[in-house]
Image 1: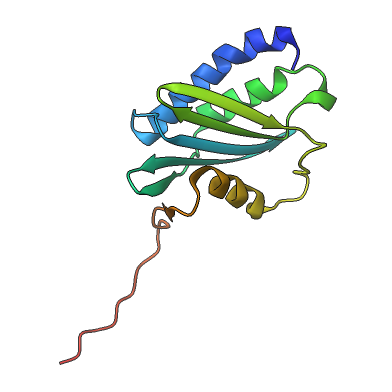
Image 2: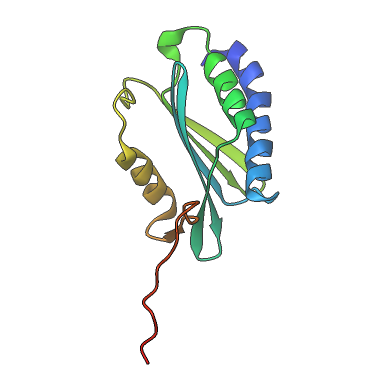
Length: 144
């Protein structure tokens, strides 16, 4: 990114952190956010370290989407826009790292890229996902 876009992106990245903190309940430390993006679509994944586990938070938030597209469009040259971003919050500070089209091809969906980034950041910690809405856990009837 060029210097001009950093002046635009810096406040947007801070706004992103605030929105992510709101999604996870206010405490941002331990956040790992991974997103892949392209024209008209994005695929975000939000995780936070909570003790010995990593918890997944569904990031289906329209404000989050708007912020991400603003960050992505901050680079006026479409050829220089990033394809994936990792956003980390540790010790009250955030860090954003980008991957560009020559590094990662997001034109083909691949859940393994997200999983690899998650494992690179958190290692083999257990990841806890919320139950899927509308699903029922069936348990065998007690035998008499």
